[in-house]
Picture 1 (tube, rainbow, N blue to C red):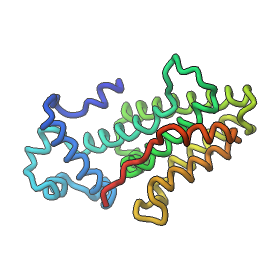
Picture 2 (cartoon, rainbow, N blue to C red; picture 1 turned 180 degrees about the vertical axis):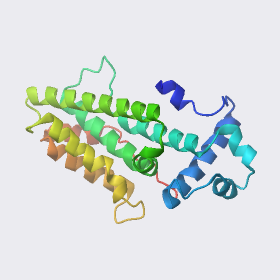
Picture 3 (tube, rainbow, N blue to C red; picture 1 turned 90 degrees about the horizontal axis):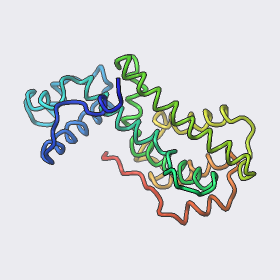
Length: 226
């Protein structure tokens, strides 16, 4: 299924009011799915939490599968397009990687609940939707790998195997939802800084590139409502 088709879940709602209502439904559903699981959350529960009737929710989403796919898609796009740069961006690979890795971690912290859903309910997602998610992931790793190899050729990165290292970084960030808690020891901003620094070390990122990304305006994760 084309990405544009998946992203445009539900009826067209061009008005700001309609967008706000969709966003409210998604926020409440995300919290319930995260706390109770996909199977343990019903449309009745979503409606009760919102304080609305079922027709209100069904106007925007045909069922809870469409809601969870919308959440998973938005989170996946936010996290897996962070290694894309403008064609006229002439900075060296290590500078792009420093920025891209920081953006990736920040996006994953911001969207950790929806990202968790994408992993936990994979079997419930339509095959064409799973294929679209795989395409996003493959494109992300292709972009990441290309920058890593360019940086290694330029002598600004130090690591051995591109695929193994990229997938190791993916595991460190992608499975954050299994241990991250927004009310834990580190604030979201502190976690982004420390986890990004860990990724830098995994590829031997040049210290000058690390300093460069700290001088740029950082991307901070949004605080997740508790």
